[in-house]
Image 1 (cartoon, rainbow, N blue to C red):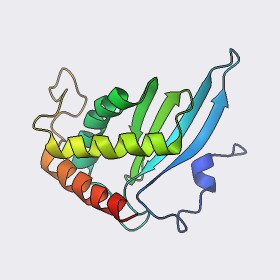
Image 2: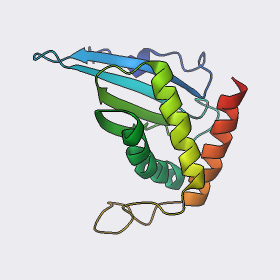
Image 3: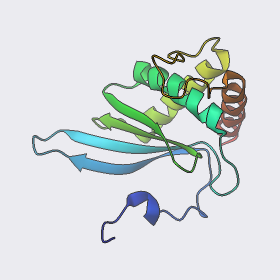
Length: 147
């Protein structure tokens, strides 16, 4: 493959999670700016989010980040299960995205119900764990506070 994939260029041994970083930038032909952010929650190659937890976090962060950041296109889990990609139209700063993420994780900890967890609304509705999502969110928040 001759295409350069940004995340494949990142030396995953050199990063220290949790963090937020700009991971891509595209300007459309009409001049819109699309930004991709790496929301890394777990240390690469040392820990992963369980599938049920990352699925629940996906459902919750999809709403909570949209409440805090304008023009969110998507919040997608990474295949390696160490975090999420956030795609937005526009250019919020890394600090703004990190604040939104920290505030959203705090809201996850306080959440009592996960949206869209029926067979009608979700393609794998049985694979959720609010408890695990909250445990990870609390752990990640504590690590952000240390930095």
